[in-house]
Image (cartoon, rainbow, N blue to C red; front, top):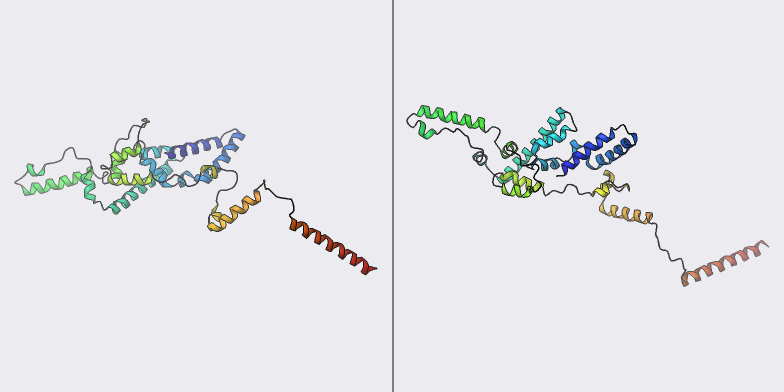
Length: 272
């Protein structure tokens, strides 16, 4: 997951930028500006990059909160964590609407109650007691499932996978648990298929100044092609030129020289 490296680099650069060593601080500050130019601020990073980490059963939302804790104060961490969770729930609702999966299916797949009341066998001959028990059962179900009303809540509340398992196969885990998390598995499938960036890091951190700014990115493809070609021509250092004149050029130069000489003689005669 790239979010690990992203937070690690951001934390390290921030620490070095505040170093007492002026040389190290200046270097870290310059690198931090490049880092921010490429990724933007951590809080402004594409949310799907963080969602991808949440969908890793080894880390989930707790690790995101832990990473934010190294960079921000508690209030901001709380707001950002809540925002990430809300985005995931919105994705869940969107996918659920597309797949037309009823909420009853989600409740039926929830964690079963340990002490359910068997209404049918307890008071078969008492309609009043039966009705009260039904109400009690509904109240208990509502209380026990209030935090498990969808796959997102159930996924986040369940135990995490072993974080030290180096052979952990994330895609295989979602494939195995696709029946348990029907909607979340579809979200994970789409999120993990998204490339982290469409810009090569070599281009982003290059000192050649080829990073597209808002003005350049608004140019038409034809104009961009013209500018790129023109830039290559102007910056080209090894240009092979054939300086040997052709026969036509020699004749032209001779005629031009003769004409100049004749004009000079005529001017001298006129002056005399």
